Amino acid sequence: MEGTPVEVIKVLGKTGVYGEAYLALIKILDGKDKGQVRKRVVKGPLRKGDILMLLETEREHKGISGRRR
Image (cartoon, one colour):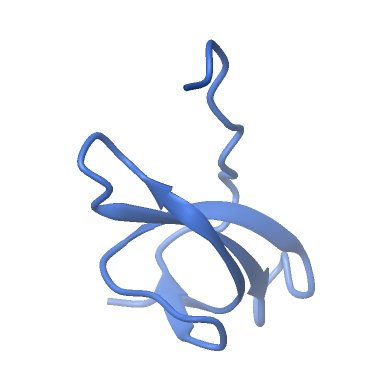
């Protein structure tokens, strides 16, 4: 299984119904989108500086519209 390496620049917070995922700012380290910074939702434990392998890098988290608590 191949993937694209990305680095976690900043963990923005928890998301998901039960807080099981994190919203993170990531920097793409290789491939056609190299150098770009995007927001992604990542499931599992996460820290700044972690290197992840993403199967695709084109999608970006757009945010949730609606009321805030």
